[in-house]
Every structure is written in C-alpha cells, then in structure tokens.
Length: 152
Image: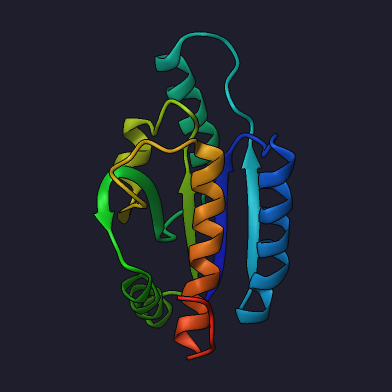
C-alpha cells in the first residue's frame, strides 16, 4: 500500500526537520511513501485559516481514496493497534493518505471527508511535532508488521 502524508505548512524548526528527514528516508524500505505540503494560511483570522487550509488539503486528495485525519478527539491507538489497522487498510486499498491539519485545526469539510480520525493524544500538540510523531509511528508500525526489532 502506498502511504501519503499531506501536511499544512513547512517544518521550520531545524531539529524537527532533520528528524523528519531521517524518517522519510527510512520509510520507503517498507513500501511507497510520499509527503505533500500545502501552504499554511497567513493572517490572524483562525476561522479563515482553517477554511482556506482545508480547501488546499482537499484539492491535494485524490477522489475516493481513504483519508485518515489527525484529530485530537479521534481514536487513540497503541503502536501495535496502528500496525494492525494499517495492515487491514492494505488489504482493502492500494493507497492511504494521512492528513495533518494546520495550527488552528481541521475544517468541517476535512472532518467530513475523513474515513478515520486518528488521535495521537488528548494533549494539544504543536502541528510540527504531530507531523513528526506520525512519521515515527508509521515507521514503528512498519517495523512491528515485519516483526523487526525496534526499541520498546
């Protein structure tokens, strides 16, 4: 299954960007992976930012493809549960897109479009960190699925 991550904004923190780069380099060993960035909104109106960013993300999504949305109120999964859920998705589809919305959250249109809402934590996380954690958990899930060692 091809995994794709669509994220709002750029990774500006050099240390976060370096860690993300390392994980992006590792992931293709376990299957096709790509990452797409859409521009974050500029200005001080959060409602407008959420709407504009949501439209940009929706334009980047192929029609009919399953899409998981990172959402604080979504379903929390352990790493083994994530690995199993991704394996189930691989049996049902050839592509899966995961979306990390911007700093102000996801638009109603993205919430409606999501086939699954995944929560990393009930805590509010910086969206750059959430993106990094998604990459790390995708890598960990791939290792778990292949029964390869990875620190516990």
